[in-house]
Length: 327
Image 1 (cartoon, helix red, strand yellow):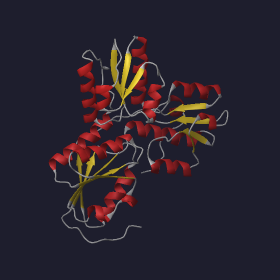
Image 2 (spheres, one colour):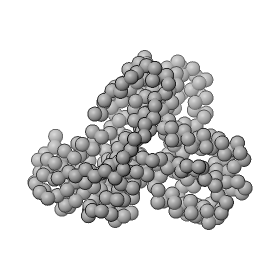
Image 3 (cartoon, helix red, strand yellow):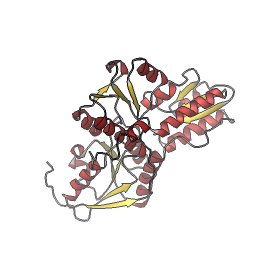
Image 4 (cartoon, rainbow, N blue to C red):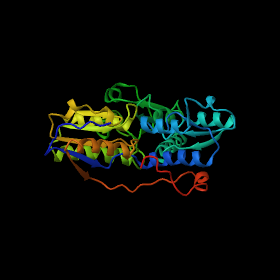
């Protein structure tokens, strides 16, 4: 229960958009919803369907069984692969165990997997800019580990031994735009003939959410940014880091329960956004928290998003509407 605090008349919480769920997360959530509705239970999900504590806890309560590896799924049962993508060997192993596979990989992550295979077939070496321990990077690396070199930092870009011959750079979809530019410039200094895919790999949602944070900080005097997102969410952490790099302290929170009054009691203008895995309901709970303390909540939109991804064909045939679990 939210306790009433002292008033804060004239204080403003800037609620920015784009924020929250992206098309890939919407699709992954829709896949789990459809599977729960139309497939026999239990439904198994390899790893977290998306990196958000609230979403995972919700589906755990709904009876979804989250597993680390497909070995934990009984033969013949349904397993959903998370939005972050998988290495080919994971799918082969699931097929060998006669599992009913539903792939919730974000299509923009699938795009990178397809690029890997195309460039490998054309004789390229691949430099992959990403976080080694992130599930998305692990899945991409699994396509051709002997041909892919992960570059995580600008110092690595300047110091690591690099391949010779035809080389292309691909990236994780959820990186910091500015950090990635610096890493790629460092690589280009050493490999002037470095090539790129026709369209960049950092996804539209990552780009739009980071740009919105930048614009709000440029246009207002916010002194603290709240980012709704879980600790293991790459894109949420990049939003927090971006705010701090621009001189505005930032707090990564899972929900309104993580807000501390000591964070904001001496402030007059705050920013609020949400990572691409965070449900809108969590955003509205935080907005309500500040309204209850007499803060004005002002919504500002910097970009309109209209990207959607269809469900897998086998699920489209089974359902015509989504459950609104987080509405």
